[in-house]
Image 1 (cartoon, rainbow, N blue to C red):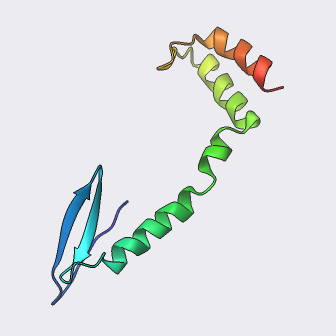
Image 2: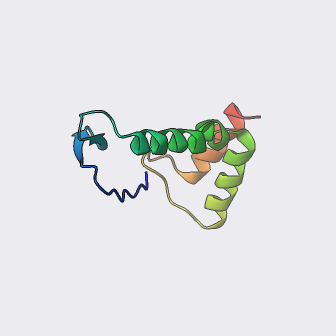
Amino acid sequence: MNMQMHLVGESIFSHAVGRVVVHYNADGMVFPLWLSACKEERTLTKGLMEKIAEPSNLWKAFKRVRTNDGSHGVDNMAVKELGKWLKANYQ
């Protein structure tokens, strides 16, 4: 989330909740600008995982990795094995 706050006459403070920093106004209420930025971020990423996992996108990514002689990922699945897996699971 890329949010810049330039405020005059209103103090804010921040509190980390896990890996997210929540911004509050002087009254202890969540800062409206922060909430707006959260909503915008959720809107921008809505349906992203579905798009990533579309079979046509997976095949396109596989072909690109194969063309570039890419190595295995964190799952240690070799590129040849991935091709077999995609054929078996996404026809």
